[in-house]
Image 1 (cartoon, rainbow, N blue to C red):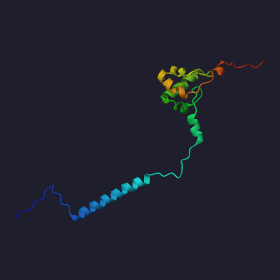
Image 2: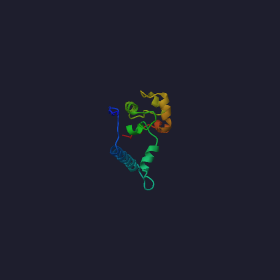
Image 3: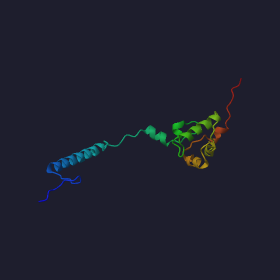
Image 4: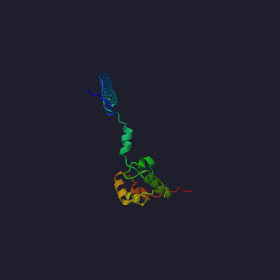
Length: 139
């Protein structure tokens, strides 16, 4: 009669061990299912839309006066380029630094391709406003 010698690789599962493993797997599956179920978001009706934010996002950007946040909405303009636009226009103050969209290409870091991409989103002063001279009051 041979005796069975247990080695390290011999895994003998008893019924109790299998039952415990089954309970553990069911509990883990239930926890994952509950977590996924709790993450679903249900809106009651339509989400609210702020008309002020929609209008601000659809308005064109004037690089002569708009701030950093507005300039960041231009395509191809990151924080460094927006800051360069502000520095560039401060050299020409109070006269407008940008009269045409091509003037954006003169800003360091912005080339003609970026200026052309930003052209549809840029609002510049009218030409007749640029030709007007301030009237001095009589002394």
